[in-house]
Length: 417
Image (cartoon, rainbow, N blue to C red; front, side, top):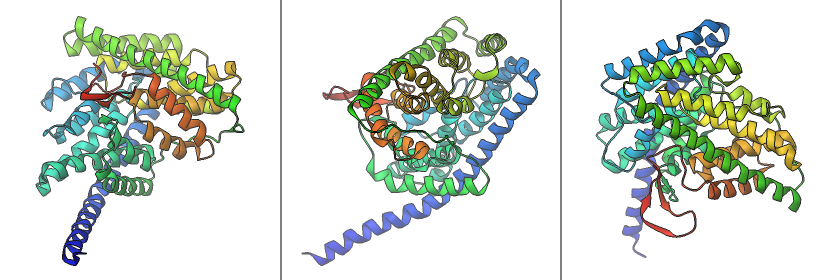
């Protein structure tokens, strides 16, 4: 054994560990603070909307402000999470200004009742924070990509309170079929630090009620498999409507100011028709569904409301709405399959999330962080089926499928458009 070579190898690993421990402390701390600020701002906006019903009628005005802010910061449009995902495979980085404008845009969207989440904004803000560190420390390209993933993990963790899911999601989302194991320690360290800082700053992450899990058996597994298959079909519907509505807005309303006015008016009309349960992110309705109660057509209403909001140009994300849709769908369909509605809602939430983001490993871990490990076998089975049966549909057009879901190699990767 060459002792000198061994010591040199050990030193290189220790340098990597020390470097990313320090960087994770820095970016995790900053992302935790920024994430807490973002979380509290969005929560305050949502509370103001619930108290002051007249804010709904200012939704078109808030859209005009959002478009103006984007133009002020030098962007005609912004691809949101797609911008981050694409940057992980190119030499580009997310400009800090993108973080500022998505922060403002998301808060304004929630203030006036747009149906949107906040994860797309969180990923973009995290990447914007990371780009500041990249410039500050003059990081080389490989380290810069790791820093971007750390920023994504940190903000996701700070906002949602699911640190392990946040780390794995950042590693898994860009290139489906490939996990960047080099990023595991940096992403997990920054995610846990950001989570700790956000908790210190009184940020409440996603919290779900207890679920009554059934005894393991062939019959219940078959029913869960059918539910997972149906969730994949619901996810395809959700993604198709999202892309269709966005395409129609951009094809027939070329002016972004006109798009947000028309979209805002349509959301106002639907709110007056359906009620206010479908405005905002919808996490409260997801929790209610996991408790065993959901309006049968709620998932369809949320699909349409979210598609109109995002397609028109309002800001936020689609992951929390996907929680709403999956939970409400599971709660509605589960009893028809002989499954407890609360348990079916939990399975539906995880399975539909897995289908729309194509991140089965992160989805399985999310089930543990939200519902505990007792139902792990059911959630893992549901994720496997929903991931396979959703095909190449995805929330993120920049996402690249490195391996076919049917087991065949894909030479140059496949991207769904």
